[in-house]
Length: 285
Ligand SMILES: *[C@@H]1O[C@H](CO)[C@@H](O)[C@H](O)[C@H]1NC(C)=O
Ligand SMILES: *[C@@H]1O[C@H](CO)[C@@H](O)[C@H](O)[C@H]1NC(C)=O
Image (cartoon, rainbow, N blue to C red; front, side, top):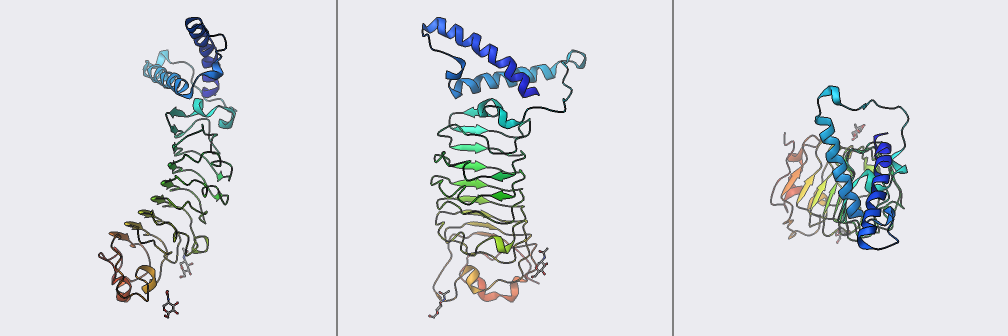
């Protein structure tokens, strides 16, 4: 409702503004729709500021803010009114009214922050046109389904966070990811292919804590930090980190491994860590 009111308030205002700009510049075709997203987001920021000022008024002077049961859905509103768009970045955190799907992104978006919303599903169309994306943060949503190919075409994507969602399996991931966070989901071993990370030769941070995994998937050589604590891992073997054939192999990058909160007793598998410069944190007795 608030956002709806905002639209009602904003649109006439933009028209006045457009009209005055028109007079000023002498152009005849200027209409509100032709304002750039940068300008729109500036007006939105001003609007937020004015809202904050209103909130700061003493209680008696506050305008009626009582919630109205049926409001418009977030998908009815243009993304850059609902979210804050700044050159290349789209911020949609805790959007009200509820955001249940990925919003339509402006062309050339590089950074999307859509944390703490109610997104349930990522469809293969959501990011299909936005190959410029470098970072996507979807922490704290309700995502339980990701269509295959939803991320696989994002060749520039370096950071992806799906932490605090409801995933039981992982989608295909783009090869150039440096950081992948899927902490605190419902991942099962069946849903994480053993070789899913194998081709990701730039991967540095891999966070999979607080899931239901029973096995450690293949960890690329480039990984520096691996968090896989609080899962259901019962065994490790030579192949897990060191490979069983190459006795000269040294895993130089890996410098932090969290395996605590798993049933596995690591001291039973002394051969499994010979290639590493640090031992995993975890149970040894
Ligand atoms: C943990 O793994 C064991 C088998 O190793 C299985 O029986 C048990 O149900 C699993 N527990 C959870 C919470 O997934
Ligand atoms: C290890 O070497 C054996 C024999 O040379 C081969 O059959 C096996 O596939 C190799 N294992 C791996 C994990 O490379």
